[in-house]
Image 1: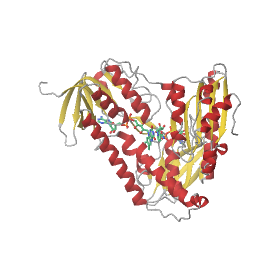
Image 2 (image 1 turned 30 degrees about the vertical axis):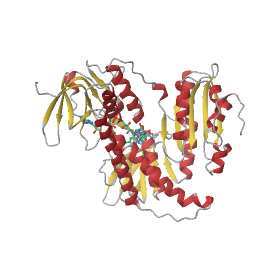
Image 3 (image 1 turned 60 degrees about the vertical axis):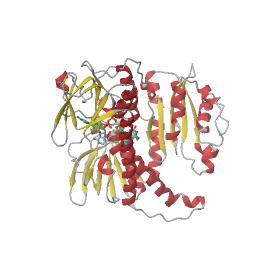
Image 4 (image 1 turned 180 degrees about the horizontal axis):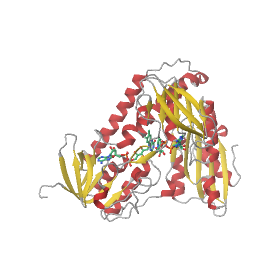
Length: 468
Ligand code: FAD
Ligand code: NAI
């Protein structure tokens, strides 16, 4: 073991969990290495997730707006799609971001060990590089941050040609005539929106009787209405039973969940987006006695696994599969193993769907409050009554605030409309400080801004909304 490289902490996986853990460890003076088998750092989020999808959402939103909304503002244009350029700018942005993580590693003295990591025993990580060379690293602590992968569906084989997962749907070389999306969740609706805006007919087949499970039901209804107006068709309460692929398309069979005759949908491409599952293949968990739960997640208690000195964070553990959740856990885990007090406010992890309109929320939904038997009050405010939204001709959507009926503490904030991804942070801060709705209602907001609608919704909790 004399020439075994030795670290305070070895992190397996270089996504938002892993790279933030590496950087925080470096900042705290720990000798840290991140093992990543992909050719670039950044994990799912930077390479094939958050970033490329947002690049296409942004570009396709402008393309659609140029075709339908600019004229109202006195700008006459006839946009023409240049799909190769749209894909190229996406790739360039992603490349710049992944290089940025390399830069941050150098700055914080974090080693990137390229290859596949496996826990070979307590305090030991074996790394197999692309050319087959095996190196063993010694580590006081090991952090597992190996992320997740798309969940498969029996009878629907992903070939990344005609039947794609999110990675394939981010790189189609043509606009599909008809795209069928399986799953009305975040990926299905974000990527379905991208291709709809670029001209595809889009049909979404969903198992449940509603879209976006987990979202407040009132928001989900408004969201579905808006997407339907944009031309996205929904087949709810429907179960896909198989897909037959030819060179030019896919024939998808589905049937009502409640039973009934099977039907067929002919598609040019099918996007399978029914959720993601934790990724722990060939990780050597058995070598340190870690057992996964029924769904494959690594159980943790304050980021500690059942094995001494082994921690787990991000998508591979329970909780929302979100980059900012992985990032929060990374910082808290490293601070804890460095002897500090790590903390994550699990009840205040915001969610955003970056469609048009966007949907953003934090805290409890009405359904959750009802299930908890908690008495609450509701304040709402429509963007159609917000002056900035009116002058910008962007009046779709509303803000809804839920507050405790007795203490007035804000328990949930739900927004639908343009740009709400940038506005939900206000409620994250307010709720982190356990604000009452009156605290938000009595906070001066700049005029004219869309954020005034958030204040007005808080005023609505006590019924003194002034602008509607
Ligand atoms: P990952 O990012 O998956 O990183 C894990 C890394 O570990 C990977 O790079 C993998 O190659 C590596 N790895 C795995 N096993 C090994 C091994 N044995 N050895 C070495 N390396 C290994 N979240 C948001 O918050 N906002 C968004 O807008 C958003 N958009 C998304 C869009 C799409 C299309 C997808 C698919 C996901 C999106 N997500 C988004 C989710 C987000 O990408 C994940 O929650 C986040 O990446 C999880 O981070 P992680 O570090 O846990 O895992
Ligand atoms: P999801 O969990 O958001 O949605 C999956 C949908 O598929 C659900 O509505 C579910 O009911 C449905 N479904 C499940 N099985 C089905 C079946 N057999 N037939 C038809 N429908 C079925 O999962 P999705 O969209 O794949 O995204 C995975 C995760 O990636 C998200 O949960 C989220 O954590 C992350 N993500 C986050 C984004 C963001 O923050 N903006 C963007 C994209 C992904």
